[in-house]
Image 1 (cartoon, helix red, strand yellow):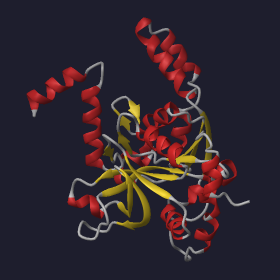
Image 2 (cartoon, rainbow, N blue to C red):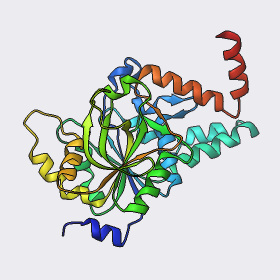
Image 3 (cartoon, helix red, strand yellow):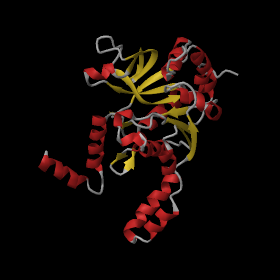
Image 4 (cartoon, helix red, strand yellow):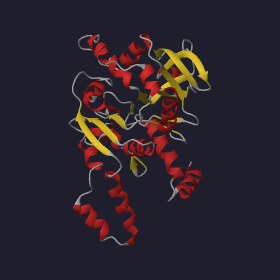
Amino acid sequence: MPYTTKAVMSKIQKVRKAVIPAAGLGTRFLPQTKAMPKEMLPIVDKPIIQHIVEELVEVGIETIIIITGYHKRAIEDHFDTPSTELINNLKTGGKKKIPLLKETRKISELANFVYLRQKGPYGNGTPLLNVRSIIEGEPFIYAWGDDFIDANPSEFRQIVDVYEKYGCSVLSSVRAKKDDDYNRWGFVSGEEIEPGIIDAKKIIEKPGKEKAPSSLGNVSSFLFAPEIYNYIDEAFANLKEGKEFYYNDILKLMLKRGERVLAAEIKGGEFQDTGNKLEYMKTVVKFGLRHPEFGKSFRKYLKENI
């Protein structure tokens, strides 16, 4: 039976699951990513993907499905129970290492982790096909493993709040600040139904500043209502041979058929494109300055040396 907006609005389901596509090769960070997944690049002392997982768990996500490739075993190992060797090493390291032991054990207990190998055409829409049997019929968050919006409350808290209010799919968005942003992101046209929330009618990819329908760019995560699976087969059937399958193919079809999709500005949000070398370095510095252990010393070092 098709999922209708009316049905979803009458009884909004709790958002319990999230999907993180992490099968990309990370070529922009070679040679570092030759053997290490880009999602495992550290932000000071924590991998990017762990930062994302922790924020998902904070909003009530119980199951996290990570779509991987043959070269992503390190992600599975990271969220697995720590090895006996590591536990014994930390236990014998004295009181200073007890917090590290607790922190390491906590990682594997964050959520129920499910790992799937990506199968199908290349593109960021294919993971949605791969998780169908696990997700279909439920709302879920679709979050990249190598970028995020830094905000308080978190981007996930904010899009879940919008979903719970309106009962439809929500796109995380930030305001474009530079002309180049209009050449990198997708932008929505539509009615602003409340400050920072646009009822999307069309999504225009990389329009350039002159042709952009708004300044609200769609980046980072999405919260998809169950209706998305009414359209995924048709979007896939429309795919031309040899072409990549994009999630935008599904979104555009949803909008064309009248499904409600909102673009929500993440209040106080700053997009951290940690899949980009320069932006990754900026993020490491930003989080290093916040670090409770050495943030002040790091700030002092930067002032003295830059």
